[in-house]
Amino acid sequence: MKLMKLTFAVICAVLIASSALAMDMKPGKGVTLNPARATWNTGFFQEALVRRGLEELGYTVKKPKDLSNPIAYKSIYLGDIDYWCNGNFPLHDAQLPKNFEKRGVILDPIIKAGGMQGYLVSKKEVEKFGITSLDDFKRPEVKKAFDLNGDGKADLTACPPGWGCEKVIARHMEVYDLAGHIKPIKASYEAGMASALGAFKSGKPIFFYTWTPNWTVFKVKPGKDVMWINVPAEGDTEAPVSGIEGAVSDPLRPGFVVYDITVVANKTFLEKNAAAAAFLKSFRLTIGDVSAQNTRMNEGEKSDKDIAKHVDEWIAKHQDKWNGWLDAARKAAK
Image (cartoon, rainbow, N blue to C red; front, side, top):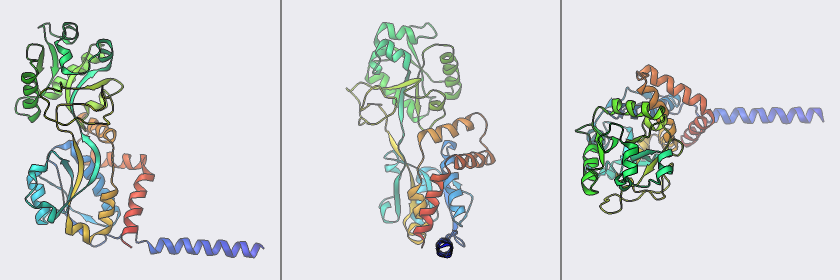
């Protein structure tokens, strides 16, 4: 009986060893990849994570080129770039080359509805005053609560001149007749948010525009500290969005385009590299992951060495998920 047990154990060990040998741990060995990344550093983290995964699969991954959106999509279409992890759709639809789908692929989202934009208000005041939309800032008691400089208007930490969001906010002020009730503060965004957060920590209300992923929603968390509010239905040109954490309603009318964050890749590259394709298709993050890392960058940890350390720490914290992506990629290459 002991001999039978020993023999069975040996057979199992051999089978396990054979299975490991059958799975090529470095299916990308000998293949060099050409990635790109966004020109905004809040998108660097996902590129660095993907690069690390592909390197573990044996690929040689060149230093990413920092490209503007239209140039990145054209480069992917032409085959000069294999992939980038900073697609924002439908926001970037108009920036794609004609017939892009013939040579390029937009993969399923890394973060579904990850590109959220809108107005956030301190939860305490939302509940105290029953705030659900920008229209509520026309009410005297609400204006007074958010008037931090005594000019009779609610103070909104907004966008500096020249930013796309600055134009949308200006349109909202006009369309919803809010110019006499809300004062958008258009100074440096980081300086404006630092001042607003300082006031919030001292117990004062906060009212600001932001987008995700972004360090702001790590400092004050939607649903816990602040709430997303609506723009009025009349004049809203954007579709309502469902499933937004920390929203005052579901669906929510944020007044801005909400987009998915995706990997975009060259079709031929995906067809020739099954392991890379499987890894890219598996790759997922959360708003919390990216916002936490963006916060560290905002606080000074923004060198390539710092970002590599953030990647190390994220992998260590999510080792099972990471190994699952790598295993799926290796199996796809068999």
